[in-house]
Length: 168
Image 1 (cartoon, rainbow, N blue to C red):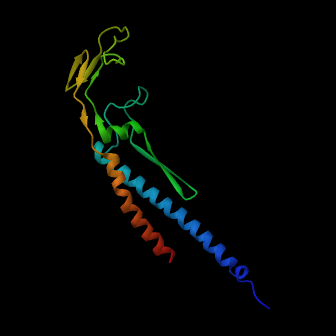
Image 2: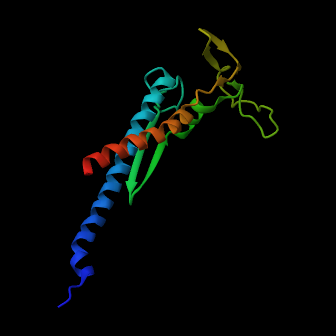
Image 3: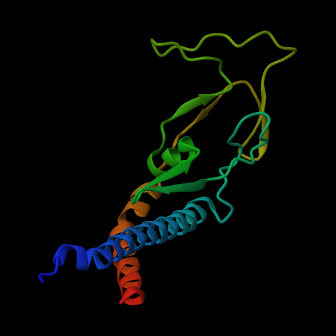
């Protein structure tokens, strides 16, 4: 009486498939977490340790907006979300020269008048109080996202080696 090889190996192949799926999810989760930690470390390095840019954020946040990273793993894939995107882009590319407190810039590049207020805008700039618009010279970027992306191949290699050592 002949045996059916496929039927005999079914439990083994099912176990191997389950193990491969579990290994892949563990690997992607560990890599995503390591990338998150590396990104937060780089965020601290480019902002002076607190992951905040001075005077950046909405009126309600009172300048407490921080660089952050979230990730989501599903089906062997990971989405890494750098929040808020504007802060990450500013720390990567810098900012162009611009005017602070002048009003709104039109499409043609001119500035419109500010809304009527009790007096001119008052800004603390350069260690002193200044009335009126201030021309900001811009800032250089610190390549924060490029530095995060450069670390990904190293992190993937390390985490893959660690997971495979534990599995075998």
